Amino acid sequence: MRKVLLRRVYQTICDATPLKSDCGKLCSNACCKGDSGSGMWLFPGEKEHLATNRNRHTFDILEGDAGIVVCSGSCERGVRPLSCRIFPIFPVTTIYNRSGKAKVTAPFDIRAIRICPLADPESETIEGSFRRRVRLAGKLLCRNREAMEFLKERSRELMDIARLL
Image: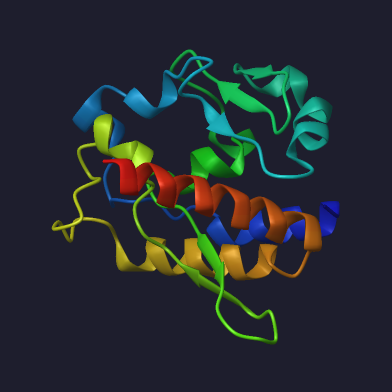
């Protein structure tokens, strides 16, 4: 994915957060303490981007197909991967018509249910502006073929998990 698009997506999220207060205080930063089975996904192009900022982040990038980031619990917020910036929401992307146009929604990331007290579908605690920015970030990502394929694959994976639950 082009660096320009990745920067634009980061700027879209900017300083938006799920709550006006520090949501990490509700769960002792549970989403920031992943492991190889529960880390955050790296979006296309992020692995290279983060490698250039290696001296500014405190998380580990695990090798693999897509790349996973795991963290010890704190980091410099300005160098967080996109998955960390948008959690517990995910820009679910589906193709909904013959033209191949993508539809992007911004529901809870189903994986958040077990660790995030905000991930309650009945709850309205998430800031509406945060959800809108995540959705807009997803739409921007869909302008890039590789990023759109990544979103579609992860969206299918999340929907499969939801069906199993």
